[in-house]
Image (cartoon, rainbow, N blue to C red; front, top):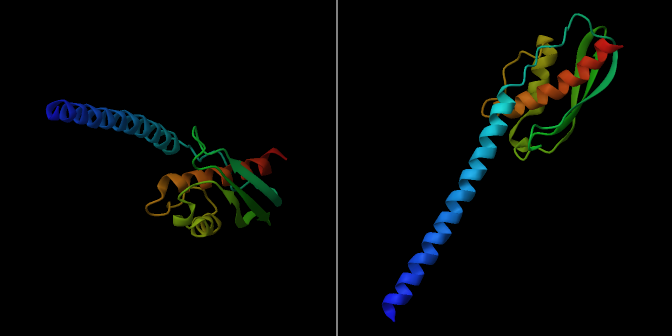
Length: 141
């Protein structure tokens, strides 16, 4: 009887380990795809020499799993980006990313080709994508 219980215990343990391994593999696959997509964001379609004054809202849907969804407001004055504000972010790591610092870099450089926040490169790119989407509106007017 003891041997049978021990065998059942091992079977249950192995089943649990198997389920955890499969679940972990699926999760890792999703995370890898999201990271690949975030790394591939181009951020190069805005001509900062052709900005129209105004206030624009930019939105980035956050990639295939919506992990980095965010929205910002960009103010253009005298043909230059003068201020950027975060309106919303559904990024679970948003509290670890200083969007304000990133936005200050964009304003100072008048470019989206700025250094990302250390340790938050993919989130930084998502925030910059929302800024780019706002600025694309200035060139469509």
